[in-house]
Image: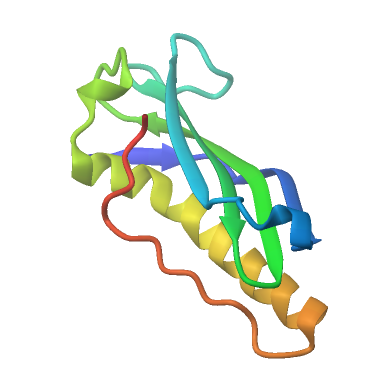
Length: 129
């Protein structure tokens, strides 16, 4: 897949202490891909796909949550809906967003806890719902 990416966008990012009333919270990661017919800067003959990750990561002492997104242009191919992409292509599109989440989580938890930061490992099972 040949693509051009626009800059990643951090829409929201939160670090919160996990309080006793948060005992039943669960980690959730939602990946979505939205094709756009027209998008600013879209090359001729390309498809525009907005990749969006909404995450809620629950740890013993804190919760990390937020939204990150990125506009991607898939060159010389028409994508009308997310099911037009295979698993490998989806992983390729979301990888930069997962890297941003990993980096921010590590840095913020390192500063907030005055200990080594929390490292994340996103498995290959990530697929838009």
